[in-house]
Image (cartoon, rainbow, N blue to C red; front, top):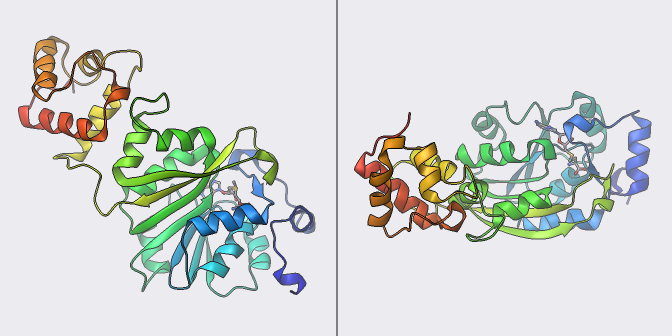
Length: 298
Ligand code: SAM
C-alpha cells in the first residue's frame, strides 16, 4: 500500500493531514472526526453497499469515512459545508475516481436536484455519515420527509437521539421523533460508540443508527399533516393526559366532550398519556379527526 492509500482514520495520519493543511476544528460545525478504522468498517458493513450502489455522505470532513465508501460502493457523493475542507478532500480522495464533493449546507441544498445530477442511472441510494450533532434531527427529518429514493440511512449520531428514534411505545424515550422516524423507516441501533474514537472527543456518547426506509409509511393515514399535528399535540406536555394535551394543543377548549367521545369511539382511553400510543393508534386517531371534522384550534 503506497502512502496515498493509507487509511485516513488513524490518529497519526489524521494529525499529519490536519497539520499539513493548517486545519483547525470549528466546534460550531460539529467537527468531530473519526480516527478508528474498525468503527468505519462496521458503519460501512451496516449499510450493505456493493459496487452497484450509490451513496451520499453528509459532512465528509477530511475524508476518513468517504474513502471507505469509495472502496465499498460504485458511486459516492459527499456534501460538505466547510469550504476549508475542499482542498484537503481533493488531496485525500485523489486516489478515487468514483467520488464527487458538493459544497453546501445539506439543509439548504435542493437534494432532489443533487440526486438527479449525481446519481443518474441509480434507482436508489444510501446515506452514510458521521453527522454533525448540532443538526442531527433536522437533517434526518429532511431526508425522510422529502421522500428521496433512499434505501437506507446509516449514521453516527448522539446516543440519546438514537435511543429516542428507535424507542417503543410505553418507554421514556418514546416521543414525536420516534413516531416520525418509524412512520417512514424501520429503526435499529447498530452499535454504541465511545467518545475516544473521535478527535476532538465529543462530550456526549454516540451510536450508529440504521433506518431502513419503508416502501410505504408504516400506517395508512388519510392526511399526513394531520397525523403529525396530532402526534405533536399529544406529546406537548408529557405528564398530561392525551385528553388534556389534545384539548389544549389541537382542539377548541369548548370541545372537551366531543374529544372524549372521539377517543372512546376508537377504543382509546382519554386518560392515557401520549407516550403509550402506538403508531397504529395515532393513525386511527388522526383519521378519526379528519373523518369527524372536529374543529381545530387554528
Ligand atoms: N465524516 C467525517 C468523519 O467521520 O471523520 C467528519 C464528520 S464531522 C462529525 C461532521 C462534518 O459535517 C464536518 O465535516 C462538518 O464540516 C460537516 N457539516 C456540518 N454542518 C453541515 C451542514 N449543514 N451541511 C453539510 N455538512 C456539514
